Image (cartoon, rainbow, N blue to C red; front, side, top):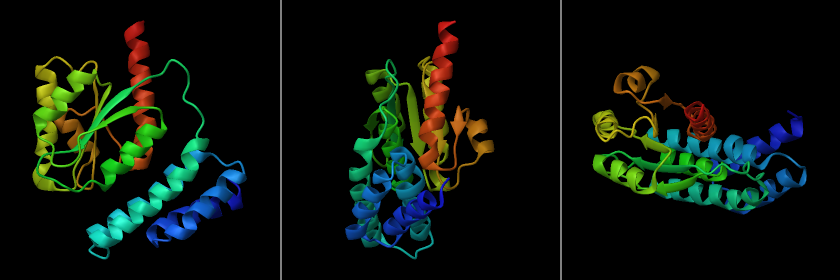
Length: 223
């Protein structure tokens, strides 16, 4: 990676963290003018900044007003970068249902995941925050989802992820629907314990992992 690209990615991240809404579009434009990959600009620049903001919020250094300004800054940058993302390979059309599990209203990670899914070519159905377990199942069934993505930042609501997976199995949908979980208290061992297909710590990188796994699953099913 060139020094200029590294510098611009850091600037994109810093703009979000430092709430520089007026600056971010110029940095994003300079990034694309240099021919750098727009998807990486979002995943390794803007959303990286938003993940830092999420941690500052958890540490009670930032509060709701700061979160909103940081989020607006991120979206301003995305507005510049998104039109330059390379088109998804023809023939691929995946659907994802995402939400924060029942009892939790922390949605920064879910929002980042949603953005990255959309920029990866997914059709995303965002159920929002504090989502009842059965809503994940009913929506996935309605749209024939390839992926259910659940997040939480509270240990008290983690068990609801397992409930959704058990309901998915009861409906016989677990073979066709990939389940991805994430959030601060979630770990690989917990994901395995509840029967989730995959856990990825960084929301910005989860979309690529999900896409690769769905593609592999479909290819194996076609054999």
